[in-house]
Length: 134
Image (cartoon, rainbow, N blue to C red; front, side, top):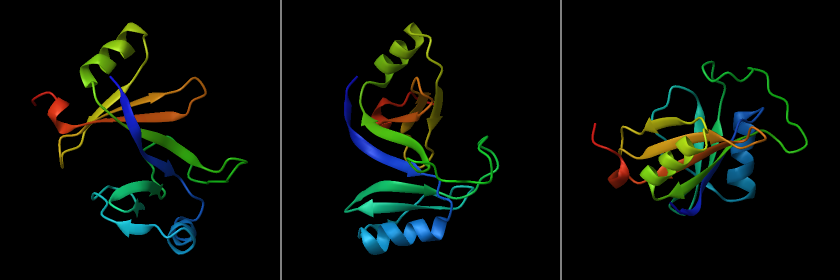
């Protein structure tokens, strides 16, 4: 059930366009493919990897509409690429850790969403080959 590497991190910026410009103009990331999600945002790429995700305002996620950056910014979640989906589900169940499961329709990748003890959202991404048949 190893974590294989950082997949991406997601920011909920105060100003979506200004933040996109910073990552593109200052750091050299490139705006790339993003699935047709129901809220605005960008996926910013380092090479072939969508490393920084920016989320615009959305009304369905329980976050307040107004955003104000704190000392560490507006981090939404951190995501890892993983293997061992069944083992991780078993580990979470054994420890009584609540989690949400999503299967991405585009490629059938499975995502598990959990929270660390301080409330930071952690997304675990498993390859389509590990996704159970529908």
